[in-house]
Length: 257
Image (cartoon, one colour):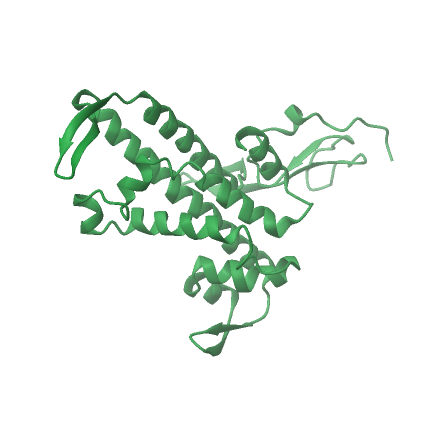
């Protein structure tokens, strides 16, 4: 084994890389033309695709979960900045005295709503892709699942397509990661709130579009109830990793938590 220095965090590259490590010993060139690599060289998960012109294109694979978590956290930060900048005016509402976002801030108000929707959508998407990746990587044989008071046998692809994210998190992933179900635990309630906001953002009901009461999406957003969604998703993912978090998740916490 050759002496070498482990690469620095900067040398490992972007924190959202799906998988990255380094060689612990020299690797000689191969007869097939692969070049030699020194111990300490960084190795990342990569993919290759063929373009329309026939050329082969290689690229480093990102973690889809990390991409979604990053987008969600960035949008949450942008939303909070916008919310703090609004000018509020005293008004008389049908229910008595109140206040309103100044008309000159209407454009920024709409931008704020958009960023909140991105936050809720991509926080939940982080969980969806995490579940599907876990199932696709680890489930090889049919799995028996309890659904609607009966047990059904499903393949990995059927689990991905047919089960809800809630079912995947509570039933499928715990045995894959050898942990207890998160359902009913401290991480579950923030997840349910995230799920409700995501469902409301994707399936925007007419009552949510025209009225701003305590059970509407706009009400939740203006009360800042969106800002914890990325953390809810990250904490749920952490539940399954115990003390062995992947690099991208550790750095996400350093950046945003």
